[in-house]
Length: 142
Image (cartoon, rainbow, N blue to C red; front, side, top):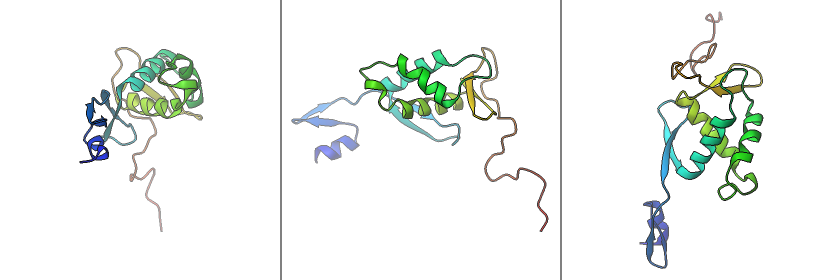
């Protein structure tokens, strides 16, 4: 078995010694209900903490650019040197927290997000949002 094969099983090898894989956390995506994946726990937790710190609790919230710009200064340099890859992580964590009901998306242009107020229902459907495949109005005449 090669080192590459070992890596697929969650173990990296260096000079024949097995190395522990870093802890992982399961994340969801509000755009794909029921689907999930795992990511490294350390960068996830750092971005999650920073995002929940910068997002306001009430509307109008922050745009995607404002979220990213607000989160980067709060991230540890060791995990995100000069903010590298922070944009991907902010988006992944935003989608996960939204799926878990911890933050809400406002139906505005541009889109804005804010924390879900304490005691509010965990999941609220987007007003005016039509799930894919569902007609958005009366049937069309042909």
